[in-house]
Amino acid sequence: NAGVMQNPRHLVRRRGQEARLRCSPMKGHSHVYWYRQLPEEGLKFMVYLQKENIIDESGMPKERFSAEFPKEGPSILRIQQVVRGDSAAYFCASSPLGQGAGNTIYFGEGSWLTVV
Amino acid sequence: AQTVTQSQPEMSVQEAETVTLSCTYDTSESNYYLFWYKQPPSRQMILVIRQEAYKQQNATENRFSVNFQKAAKSFSLKISDSQLGDTAMYFCAFMKLSGGGADGLTFGKGTHLIIQP
Image (cartoon, rainbow over all chains, first blue to last red; front, side, top):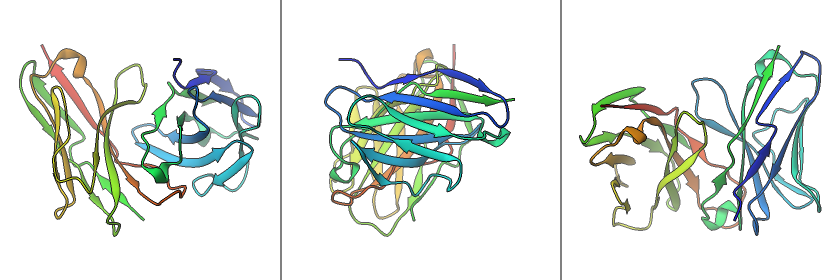
């Protein structure tokens, strides 16, 4: 049973470009979460999605960031017009039910975005 | 809002020793879960142990155990017979049990644990 799969593992973008990070949840998991880890920091919640629905995006910056989890295919975290401050590790996680049900969530290996 | 505090940025112990990592949290919730995650140099986030707040018994997983003091809002991790492979960042995390809500995990800033040979 494959775990949470993220790609790319490493991504370099110039300022002003777009970054797209993909996440395939564990088999049987319909809930996806994105977290961001800045250097020397813990992970911070960004967004929680179910298939075709954004449930909570309270942790996501209002501008330039968007996320989707379509009916078919992986979840996508999109960052437009990247700036140096977007350089971070972006972790995707999934669970079979919502976090409110107390399920443990499982993390992918992360995608490292470097903005130059 | 919840906060999680890990007051030890870095700790170093000899192999085979026992080490305790501290974590305190602040919340007004009565139902919640607490976790310890390990992040080795590979940077993957690995679940170490989980504790339901309604359970009085402390969780254990092989060499890993917790000391959960609900009244004090303390959740420390004890690693017995430490091994070189335990070297990693350890993050304490809080999750509110919100009955279907969307609250994410709240993480502390982490403790860098180094196991010396």
